[in-house]
Length: 109
Image (cartoon, rainbow, N blue to C red; front, side, top):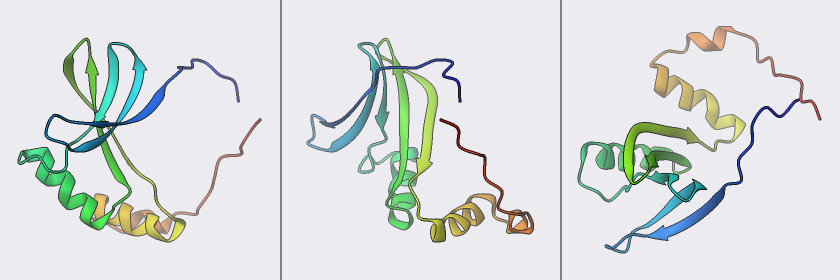
């Protein structure tokens, strides 16, 4: 593989004013991604909390640049092989993807 672009980034656990521990991915001083607060009584707080009940290793991070939310989000889950099909079926509301072969990209150094 050829590196096209890279970032020095830092993964941190931060504490909010209300004492909630959240993950933060810092790309630069004024550009980072902050984990959705699962305890927040909001549209995405409630959704995140419910998803994490079923998938504890699911994460949502909101992009913040120059002190403002950009409206962009990184979302993903750290899953074991056995959990992937269930997760995909839940997201797609379909099992059609199971009709395809499990082909993986060749890993290059």
